[in-house]
Image 1 (spheres, rainbow over the protein chains, first blue to last red):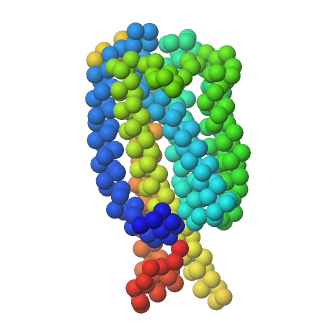
Image 2 (image 1 turned 60 degrees about the vertical axis):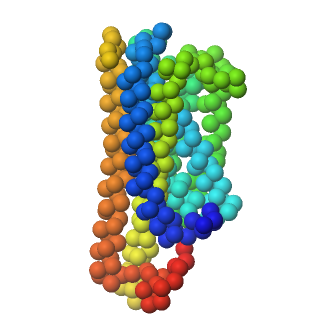
Image 3 (image 1 turned 120 degrees about the horizontal axis):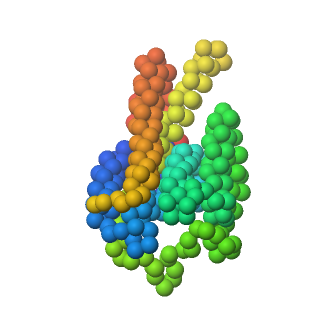
Length: 243
Length: 64
């Protein structure tokens, strides 16, 4: 089956119904492994036990940004290719991206208090992540304020593509400005993180990503069903009005 | 496993993350049940999609 076949919502629903139970199982196993690695991970020589906050903070930050990047591709799908599932994918991703960005900001704040002595500083990385959360909330409001999903999808797609400018700003903020936030621990030459910390971090990142995919497919399925309900209600209203 | 002097911050971070994830799972699960219930209710009242009616008359792939 080619990728284009999933443009048919009914086929996509059938595919999701078959795939979701397996994805739920794989995600549960991934979390079980990742959490056991987190429990066994040693304290960091500088951060102490607060490194355990990083096992949540880093995957949540990665997903908050990756979700917007995925929504940007979906936005192109809506505006350029008019793929019928593109705005479904984008709409379903918004609450998930907002939630992971929120987790990133709160866990970062809770890490900052014991490590930096403050919950918040207006540094470039933190501020650009807060802007990302505000943009997610703006998209949520936009989707709710326009009743017709096709019109809402186009407006949301434009806002998403404009907001994508924030992604490189978040990524390179620690290089472009002097920030309190640590620089990137990953480079082309490898990772600066000790393997005893890196393994649980990567395991949590994989588990979070699987969770995101599972929830996103589930939310997409719900959105397709919601649109069916909407079209049936319109049909019912037309029938009742005798048109 | 000991969490040291900053245990409150570590536990708070994990509780917030677990709470948010639980909310997301509940939202997706409950919303799915709700949409299915509404669709079943509409179907019971005889409101069905034209493509679904055509499928039941002559099984074929329905259009998007």
